[in-house]
Amino acid sequence: MYREEFLSSMEEQMEGKMKEGKIAAHLRYYEDYIQSHVRGGENEEDVIAALGDPRLIAKTLVDTDDGSEIYEEDTSDHYKSYAQEYEEESPDRLKGHSGIFDLSTTSGKIITAVVVIAVLYLLFRLLAAALPFLLILAIVLFVIRRIRER
Image (cartoon, rainbow, N blue to C red; front, side, top):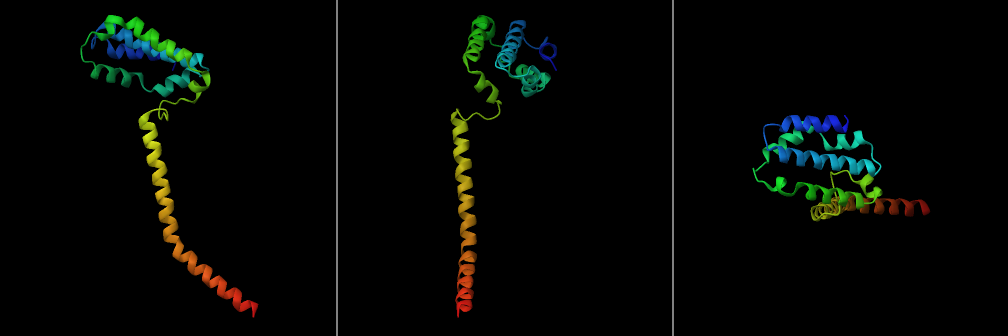
């Protein structure tokens, strides 16, 4: 799927369900997002595939629309600053960013710490369970070695 198809599919899903200004703002946001990643070296189709189903995105935007006028007041400045922020990022960071898990966020760091602690705990438990077996094996091998030396 290409950008035009993605955006038109989103627009079709939002038409009549929210104000035109908000629809335009959302479409500009996704247009800027796709273009910034493409400028960063990613393939347009890959960027769009990573975003997911445009109809589901549009449905989520419609469902979460609170009726406020915030998008219509200053949409161009808001989305221009967003696009500039992405243009300033290095292409290497854009290539490595999947949008699924970001270690630079607090929640990403907490999740990483929990995973590390869980892995260490499991390794400790495994070692504790295997230690008696390993001690008995070491003693048996030691005794066999002593018997052979005689």
